[in-house]
Image (cartoon, rainbow, N blue to C red; front, side, top):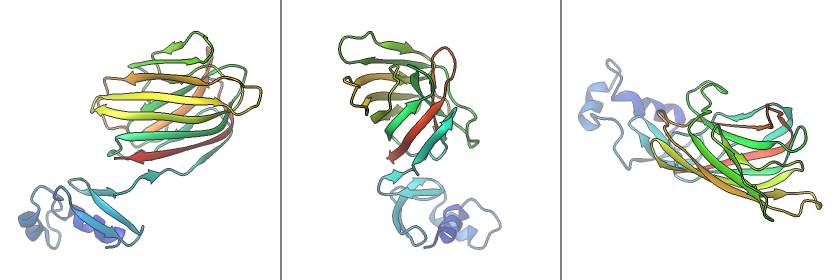
Length: 219
């Protein structure tokens, strides 16, 4: 089926008055059946039921890479509601200013940059070599850095109200002879996660100078 045909069939059971509505209510009275699979000709993907009226790709879904060029905040607003595992890849991500923390925050809703969650976190991050860990309750963090960072940040869904995070990153410059690692949790979530925002902060937001960010979403 094409994407248009999939959208039509997926919502037919919940569209009174539409051609085929009565028959659809007999076959799928509560929406798409669990485990339903379809081939999407538009995207050339095998898809499986994600909700009563949506399908998702059976394989992992990649976001487009964002190239950072002197911005305050980078926002990804393409987080699928079915994503249980979110792997963030950062490549040579460099901050404005000297020694800010990298902040990663989750968000809800459909408006990019709105409804970014800034409470409910318990996050710690530290450098190898005995440096004290930094602690923050308003975001997931990676310890203060000045050089470009590369590595992974992993965020997994524990349940509908809680996400767990861990990270392992390191400077790309030859002078950076340490790694940064840490973990944390976000609790008290009341709506599906649909966004991820990135910025840096000392006592105030300093922004991102350069680098790249890309994300993998998995069910």
